[in-house]
Length: 137
Image (cartoon, rainbow, N blue to C red; front, side, top):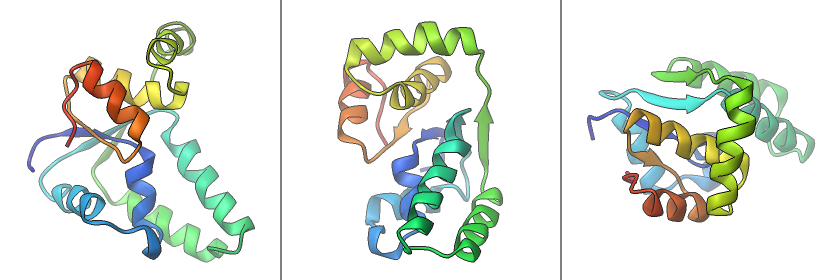
């Protein structure tokens, strides 16, 4: 893999938890040596929420979360900003059309707009991507 792509949080967060690692996510991470990943503007909040929940459940310490944030900050991940009006109008419509969350629709929308494949472990997002003719890594 040496092409740029959109990566969703289902893939990124497997890198944080040893018991969630898998070949697919590891391959996506390895590809970032030569590729850039794009994420929608909600992504930092999604990462933060997963870390916070993991801390509350004693799966991670605050130090673990801080270390993970430092590690992903070193990766070639570009956060694409989006206009709130577009998020409420177009991304909401895309979520309705594919019966997915607005969070997932933001990744699909980004992949569609940039003409990039998407890396995701989310079954519903992958189905929506196929229906939208977005390639899946």
